[in-house]
Image: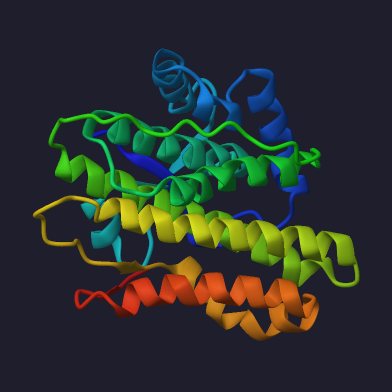
Length: 264
């Protein structure tokens, strides 16, 4: 099984400036969030290129506290080009979910699908300071293949990647200090990523007749709870309530699952 490369939690970028070069490079190559609305052939090619060491440089050998969870889902923790690894990981995870949904179908509602697909566009908009001009949402087809293992793996990997994106955004809130527009931009992105992460988990268990897999608590999830009071202080009340609701929704997914696994 090809490994899915993710940064070690301690290496998740904390400022959008640290992602701008990688994001600009991916845009120039046509490998940004727009690939998620491209043709299946283009998406398959994009995935191969994004996973190539010729495009993204990574350094292997990083481990997290509970390596068994990474091993279960084929995750390899790496360093190297942190911006490149971070953004390519998000896109690869999305491309895998889209491929699985096309082949297997999904019962995820269209509104939830839109919520899921909005996060990567919001991420690139934030990093590149692009105006928000909307997005094209391609709903999945009605595939009839049976790929439960691939479904669980794709959903969990996307969840991992989105939680790192949420951590990146919340770090921006904590570090923005008195820059009110940046604080609001960061917390809006964090909320979008958390909402999408809940859908990713729902996608992972969208397998009729199968026992739901364990829900994994990540280091990123614990970080968000640790800095919650700092976010509350920095963010306007209405925006904070939206963020907190998204975090509670994710927590509901945990507490509703009897197979909760604490992990790193």
